[in-house]
Length: 165
Length: 113
Image (cartoon, rainbow over all chains, first blue to last red; front, side):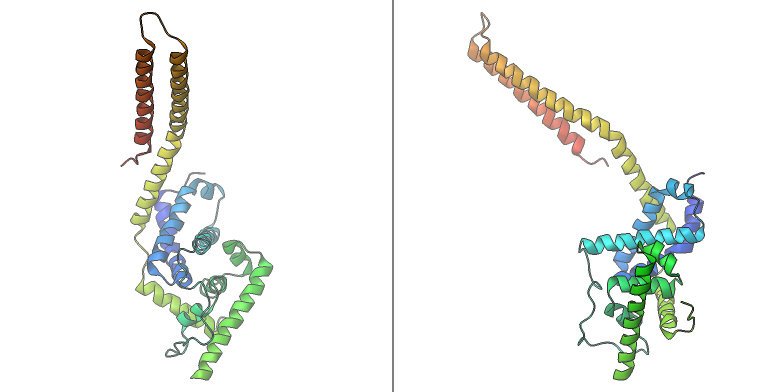
Protein backbone atom coordinates (compact mmCIF):
# COMPACT_ATOMS: atom_id res chain seq x y z
CA UNK A 1 0.00 0.00 0.00
CA UNK A 2 1.30 3.50 -0.85
CA UNK A 3 2.28 5.81 2.01
CA UNK A 4 0.15 8.80 2.95
CA UNK A 5 0.26 11.49 0.25
CA UNK A 6 0.08 15.22 0.88
CA UNK A 7 -3.55 15.32 -0.26
CA UNK A 8 -4.48 12.40 2.01
CA UNK A 9 -2.68 14.05 4.89
CA UNK A 10 -4.60 17.27 4.22
CA UNK A 11 -7.90 15.38 4.33
CA UNK A 12 -6.87 13.64 7.56
CA UNK A 13 -5.86 16.95 9.08
CA UNK A 14 -9.02 18.79 8.04
CA UNK A 15 -11.18 16.02 9.47
CA UNK A 16 -9.37 15.58 12.78
CA UNK A 17 -7.30 18.64 13.67
CA UNK A 18 -10.24 20.51 15.25
CA UNK A 19 -11.38 17.69 17.56
CA UNK A 20 -7.82 16.80 18.58
CA UNK A 21 -7.03 20.47 19.25
CA UNK A 22 -10.18 20.81 21.39
CA UNK A 23 -9.13 17.74 23.35
CA UNK A 24 -5.64 19.13 23.88
CA UNK A 25 -6.90 22.57 24.94
CA UNK A 26 -9.37 20.99 27.36
CA UNK A 27 -6.60 18.81 28.79
CA UNK A 28 -3.89 21.45 29.10
CA UNK A 29 -5.83 24.73 29.31
CA UNK A 30 -3.04 26.28 27.30
CA UNK A 31 -3.57 27.19 23.68
CA UNK A 32 0.13 27.48 22.87
CA UNK A 33 0.89 24.05 24.33
CA UNK A 34 -2.16 22.56 22.63
CA UNK A 35 -1.07 24.00 19.26
CA UNK A 36 2.39 22.58 19.71
CA UNK A 37 1.10 19.15 20.72
CA UNK A 38 -1.32 19.13 17.80
CA UNK A 39 1.51 19.77 15.36
CA UNK A 40 3.61 17.14 17.07
CA UNK A 41 0.75 14.65 16.83
CA UNK A 42 0.44 15.10 13.08
CA UNK A 43 4.21 15.15 12.62
CA UNK A 44 4.32 11.73 14.26
CA UNK A 45 1.58 10.52 11.96
CA UNK A 46 3.66 11.61 9.00
CA UNK A 47 6.79 10.04 10.44
CA UNK A 48 4.94 6.71 10.65
CA UNK A 49 2.83 7.19 7.56
CA UNK A 50 3.99 3.98 5.93
CA UNK A 51 2.97 1.92 8.97
CA UNK A 52 -0.35 3.73 9.12
CA UNK A 53 -1.27 3.00 5.53
CA UNK A 54 0.03 -0.57 5.72
CA UNK A 55 -2.27 -1.18 8.68
CA UNK A 56 -5.15 -0.22 6.38
CA UNK A 57 -6.84 2.01 8.93
CA UNK A 58 -10.31 3.32 8.24
CA UNK A 59 -11.37 6.85 9.24
CA UNK A 60 -12.47 5.80 12.75
CA UNK A 61 -9.24 3.89 13.38
CA UNK A 62 -7.18 6.85 12.15
CA UNK A 63 -9.09 9.10 14.55
CA UNK A 64 -8.43 6.74 17.46
CA UNK A 65 -4.78 6.56 16.45
CA UNK A 66 -4.51 10.36 16.48
CA UNK A 67 -6.11 10.62 19.92
CA UNK A 68 -3.75 7.90 21.13
CA UNK A 69 -0.72 9.87 19.99
CA UNK A 70 -2.14 13.07 21.51
CA UNK A 71 -2.83 11.27 24.82
CA UNK A 72 0.70 9.85 24.90
CA UNK A 73 2.13 13.30 24.26
CA UNK A 74 0.05 14.70 27.12
CA UNK A 75 1.30 11.95 29.44
CA UNK A 76 4.92 12.59 28.41
CA UNK A 77 4.46 16.24 29.17
CA UNK A 78 2.97 15.67 32.56
CA UNK A 79 5.51 13.01 33.38
CA UNK A 80 8.25 15.49 32.54
CA UNK A 81 6.37 18.11 34.59
CA UNK A 82 6.83 20.63 31.79
CA UNK A 83 3.50 22.27 32.57
CA UNK A 84 0.68 21.38 34.83
CA UNK A 85 -2.02 24.03 34.75
CA UNK A 86 -4.66 21.38 35.21
CA UNK A 87 -2.58 18.59 36.62
CA UNK A 88 -3.92 18.82 40.14
CA UNK A 89 -7.60 19.05 41.02
CA UNK A 90 -8.75 22.32 42.49
CA UNK A 91 -8.82 22.63 46.26
CA UNK A 92 -12.15 21.94 47.90
CA UNK A 93 -12.43 25.46 49.30
CA UNK A 94 -11.32 27.16 46.08
CA UNK A 95 -13.79 29.66 44.69
CA UNK A 96 -15.67 28.45 41.63
CA UNK A 97 -17.17 30.43 38.85
CA UNK A 98 -20.90 29.81 38.89
CA UNK A 99 -21.82 32.79 36.72
CA UNK A 100 -22.64 30.51 33.84
CA UNK A 101 -25.26 27.84 34.49
CA UNK A 102 -22.72 25.16 33.78
CA UNK A 103 -19.10 26.20 33.83
CA UNK A 104 -17.32 23.46 31.96
CA UNK A 105 -13.97 25.11 32.26
CA UNK A 106 -14.17 25.17 36.05
CA UNK A 107 -15.44 21.62 36.03
CA UNK A 108 -12.46 20.47 33.93
CA UNK A 109 -10.16 22.21 36.36
CA UNK A 110 -11.83 20.31 39.17
CA UNK A 111 -11.10 16.92 37.56
CA UNK A 112 -7.90 14.91 37.46
CA UNK A 113 -6.05 14.84 34.11
CA UNK A 114 -7.11 11.31 33.24
CA UNK A 115 -10.73 11.94 34.21
CA UNK A 116 -10.72 15.02 32.02
CA UNK A 117 -9.40 13.04 29.05
CA UNK A 118 -11.91 10.23 29.45
CA UNK A 119 -14.86 12.53 29.92
CA UNK A 120 -13.90 14.55 26.87
CA UNK A 121 -13.50 11.47 24.68
CA UNK A 122 -16.81 10.06 25.88
CA UNK A 123 -18.95 13.17 25.89
CA UNK A 124 -17.48 15.40 23.22
CA UNK A 125 -16.03 12.84 20.83
CA UNK A 126 -18.80 10.35 21.50
CA UNK A 127 -16.45 7.39 21.82
CA UNK A 128 -17.59 4.17 23.47
CA UNK A 129 -15.54 2.30 26.08
CA UNK A 130 -13.67 0.21 23.51
CA UNK A 131 -12.76 3.26 21.45
CA UNK A 132 -11.61 5.16 24.53
CA UNK A 133 -9.53 2.16 25.56
CA UNK A 134 -7.89 2.17 22.12
CA UNK A 135 -7.33 5.93 22.24
CA UNK A 136 -5.84 6.01 25.73
CA UNK A 137 -4.09 2.67 26.07
CA UNK A 138 -6.18 1.71 29.11
CA UNK A 139 -8.16 -1.50 29.28
CA UNK A 140 -11.93 -1.42 28.88
CA UNK A 141 -12.67 -2.26 32.48
CA UNK A 142 -10.47 0.58 33.73
CA UNK A 143 -12.11 2.95 31.27
CA UNK A 144 -15.53 1.98 32.57
CA UNK A 145 -14.53 2.49 36.21
CA UNK A 146 -12.58 5.69 35.66
CA UNK A 147 -15.28 7.16 33.45
CA UNK A 148 -17.94 6.39 36.03
CA UNK A 149 -15.83 8.13 38.65
CA UNK A 150 -15.16 11.11 36.37
CA UNK A 151 -18.84 11.47 35.56
CA UNK A 152 -19.76 11.31 39.24
CA UNK A 153 -17.18 13.95 40.14
CA UNK A 154 -18.35 16.21 37.32
CA UNK A 155 -22.00 15.89 38.30
CA UNK A 156 -21.11 16.41 41.94
CA UNK A 157 -19.30 19.58 40.95
CA UNK A 158 -22.31 20.92 39.07
CA UNK A 159 -24.82 19.99 41.76
CA UNK A 160 -22.59 21.74 44.33
CA UNK A 161 -22.60 24.77 42.04
CA UNK A 162 -26.39 24.80 41.74
CA UNK A 163 -26.75 24.54 45.52
CA UNK A 164 -24.36 27.45 45.95
CA UNK A 165 -26.47 29.52 43.54
CA UNK B 1 -23.35 5.94 27.04
CA UNK B 2 -26.45 6.77 25.10
CA UNK B 3 -27.67 9.62 27.26
CA UNK B 4 -27.73 12.10 24.41
CA UNK B 5 -29.76 14.62 26.41
CA UNK B 6 -27.48 14.51 29.42
CA UNK B 7 -26.93 18.17 30.44
CA UNK B 8 -23.27 17.47 31.14
CA UNK B 9 -22.79 16.13 27.62
CA UNK B 10 -24.61 19.10 26.11
CA UNK B 11 -22.59 21.55 28.17
CA UNK B 12 -19.32 19.92 27.18
CA UNK B 13 -20.27 19.86 23.51
CA UNK B 14 -21.22 23.52 23.49
CA UNK B 15 -17.96 24.29 25.27
CA UNK B 16 -16.09 22.31 22.60
CA UNK B 17 -17.94 24.16 19.84
CA UNK B 18 -16.96 27.46 21.48
CA UNK B 19 -13.33 26.36 21.62
CA UNK B 20 -13.38 25.35 17.95
CA UNK B 21 -14.77 28.73 16.88
CA UNK B 22 -12.42 30.84 19.00
CA UNK B 23 -9.29 28.83 18.41
CA UNK B 24 -9.00 27.19 14.98
CA UNK B 25 -6.26 24.68 14.19
CA UNK B 26 -3.08 25.99 12.54
CA UNK B 27 -2.93 25.68 8.73
CA UNK B 28 -2.14 22.25 7.36
CA UNK B 29 0.76 23.60 5.28
CA UNK B 30 2.56 24.63 8.47
CA UNK B 31 2.28 21.15 9.96
CA UNK B 32 3.29 19.51 6.68
CA UNK B 33 6.33 21.79 6.42
CA UNK B 34 7.37 21.06 10.01
CA UNK B 35 6.94 17.31 9.54
CA UNK B 36 8.88 17.30 6.28
CA UNK B 37 11.70 19.29 7.84
CA UNK B 38 11.89 16.84 10.73
CA UNK B 39 11.80 13.87 8.36
CA UNK B 40 14.69 15.41 6.42
CA UNK B 41 16.69 15.95 9.63
CA UNK B 42 16.10 12.35 10.70
CA UNK B 43 17.17 11.05 7.30
CA UNK B 44 20.36 13.12 7.44
CA UNK B 45 21.10 11.89 10.98
CA UNK B 46 20.55 8.29 9.87
CA UNK B 47 22.81 8.71 6.89
CA UNK B 48 25.53 10.38 8.96
CA UNK B 49 25.56 7.71 11.67
CA UNK B 50 28.09 5.33 9.96
CA UNK B 51 30.28 8.30 9.08
CA UNK B 52 30.27 9.45 12.71
CA UNK B 53 31.22 5.96 13.86
CA UNK B 54 34.11 5.90 11.41
CA UNK B 55 35.24 9.29 12.69
CA UNK B 56 35.23 8.02 16.26
CA UNK B 57 37.18 4.94 15.23
CA UNK B 58 39.74 7.03 13.37
CA UNK B 59 40.21 9.23 16.45
CA UNK B 60 40.82 6.16 18.60
CA UNK B 61 43.33 4.76 16.09
CA UNK B 62 45.06 8.14 15.78
CA UNK B 63 45.40 8.38 19.57
CA UNK B 64 46.80 4.83 19.71
CA UNK B 65 49.24 5.56 16.88
CA UNK B 66 50.39 8.76 18.56
CA UNK B 67 50.93 6.94 21.86
CA UNK B 68 52.89 4.20 20.08
CA UNK B 69 55.06 6.77 18.26
CA UNK B 70 55.78 8.54 21.51
CA UNK B 71 56.68 5.28 23.19
CA UNK B 72 58.99 4.30 20.31
CA UNK B 73 60.67 7.71 20.34
CA UNK B 74 61.54 7.30 23.98
CA UNK B 75 62.93 3.78 23.39
CA UNK B 76 64.90 4.29 20.14
CA UNK B 77 67.78 6.73 19.75
CA UNK B 78 68.80 6.62 16.03
CA UNK B 79 72.39 7.55 15.09
CA UNK B 80 72.87 11.14 13.97
CA UNK B 81 69.71 12.36 15.70
CA UNK B 82 69.86 13.46 19.28
CA UNK B 83 67.16 11.92 21.53
CA UNK B 84 65.62 15.23 22.61
CA UNK B 85 65.19 16.46 19.04
CA UNK B 86 63.39 13.28 17.99
CA UNK B 87 61.19 13.45 21.07
CA UNK B 88 60.24 17.06 20.28
CA UNK B 89 59.47 16.15 16.66
CA UNK B 90 57.26 13.21 17.67
CA UNK B 91 55.63 15.35 20.38
CA UNK B 92 54.77 17.97 17.78
CA UNK B 93 53.37 15.20 15.55
CA UNK B 94 51.19 13.94 18.41
CA UNK B 95 49.92 17.47 19.10
CA UNK B 96 49.10 17.91 15.39
CA UNK B 97 47.23 14.58 15.27
CA UNK B 98 45.27 15.43 18.42
CA UNK B 99 44.47 18.90 17.04
CA UNK B 100 43.32 17.40 13.76
CA UNK B 101 41.07 14.92 15.56
CA UNK B 102 39.58 17.63 17.76
CA UNK B 103 38.89 19.87 14.76
CA UNK B 104 37.29 17.00 12.86
CA UNK B 105 34.99 16.14 15.79
CA UNK B 106 34.12 19.78 16.42
CA UNK B 107 33.16 20.31 12.77
CA UNK B 108 31.07 17.11 12.63
CA UNK B 109 29.14 18.11 15.77
CA UNK B 110 28.26 21.56 14.46
CA UNK B 111 24.54 21.57 13.41
CA UNK B 112 24.05 21.87 9.68
CA UNK B 113 21.93 24.82 8.54
